[in-house]
Length: 311
Image 1 (cartoon, rainbow, N blue to C red):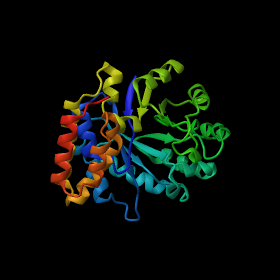
Image 2 (cartoon, helix red, strand yellow):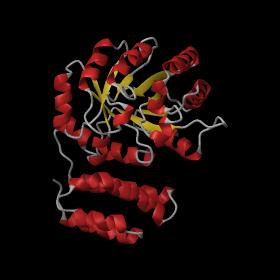
Image 3 (tube, rainbow, N blue to C red):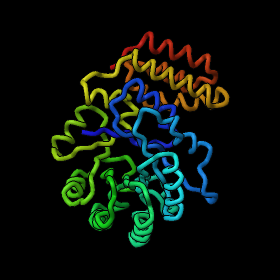
Image 4 (cartoon, one colour):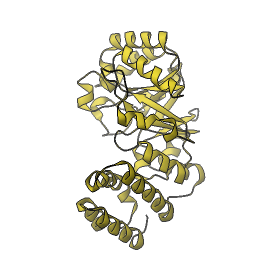
């Protein structure tokens, strides 16, 4: 079974990915948060930093692109090929309303004729592999049949399916009936994504779909950075490794970000997910959220790791 790490805008940048790979490992493919092509045909400073080969050493990284304009996708693919990438991922899964209202992400699934023209132009001109990360539709599960038929007409290197609708956002449960249909009917390789927070969740999915050979881990990896390692080896996350992981991220952000406020914004986001790993740590997490100076933040983190245990 191959294990992938999903892209999270603003969270899983190269600083986070490198620390995760170094301290926990067991991820076969890291997907880089989406690039949003601009009118100048160039990567932004942030996007360039995230895809630089020297920032992705020792990992199989795949950039993701969010667009509904084939020319922009192809231009970005050309740039990424020059950086040495051999795969690019099309984002058809983002459920954010600000993205969907512009016809991007899962919003692109609302216009299959336009998506067909887009894919036709892309696959007629692209010179690297193209994978797709998708939702199953916007409003009803029945939308997925025609969507899959469209994907089947193109040589998609990999179809990563989050079996929720756009309107679901991250509520409810993934539609495993629709995913079973996709696994049976897709002419392209299929990867499962959605609601794997524990090793037991992973085992449930693999038991339900014994032919499945690739799974993408998303929010479960943010709440438990050691999830992939636990799935592979049975070794649960421990305080020593988690502390080293945290410290590397913090020190790297101090180097690349400006000011306590900016660094702490990132670290507070880190604890928004990881905080629940600790037993009876609500007061510490609350103090972290209120901290305004890195020195104060570091003293709270020291208290947390010294006095609290991981569940």
